[in-house]
Length: 357
Image (cartoon, rainbow, N blue to C red; front, side, top):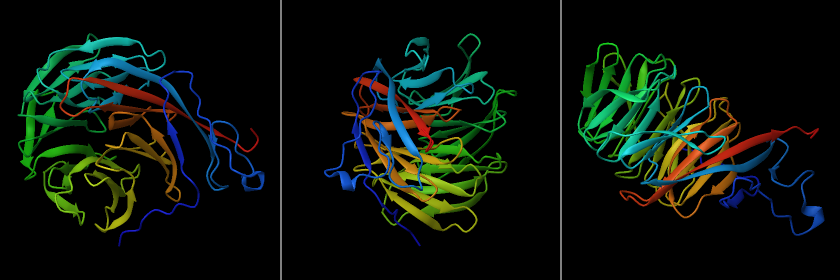
């Protein structure tokens, strides 16, 4: 059974102003008696069950070509990698300065993933290859010919790399052996893939709208979830921190949550107009951010699935989202599909305030 989210309070809706000093102001209620106990400037206090939260647009990264289909933080949070047409840019997320550029792909870069130990970056491209870059000198040390590659994901231990392709296949690359050690067909164009927290399973979203769980060691199909909407592309996938829930973002703007043990849908978040694509839990699991075609990022409080805030990042569709390792910030990638027009990356800070503040 699918349960739609409950909204007990008005959701914060905020449009960005492209300035790093912008702090969000909350509109005052019409009458003083309608005002909640605490609603200070720049904070969201929907009710007593949810923390007082402040969202601040800290940095806007721009001046690059193409949509930011994917982005990833370094494990120490000191750098952010963003896709930009044929290149991947590395940024200082604090200053907004460009640190380096990874050049070598000849088609759009669709996937970016940092190895858990920080020693490598993997990229997936429509040029028919995935690449592995050594971060000590930003050199491409492996070029893996797999066909149009849509996504890359490192195993939790960093010993294996999963590559999803337009050719319906998952390829598992071993960087130590420098070879694909196993691969299998999903039966559809693969858009997104993510390892389970314990590394035993692989969650895959495809163009036919199916969300599949595979045994990562054998490629055996363990379960498959399908929404009621036909051809509802599964554009983004992720896991809850404990691996009990699989999450998928779809073409109809919804985000679905699936109970891995039972295979049943447990919740639907009808967040976006047009497609939804980016979906990411905060490191502590208390927040979920979704992004979509409507140029919005929605923030959800996972304790009871309240929709806390809608962060508007006009005018471009929002493709990707990634949390910093310490959970204090999240980055959002935007752009125009299949266009070399400018894309933008927004870095938002999230600050919680105690009742004593």
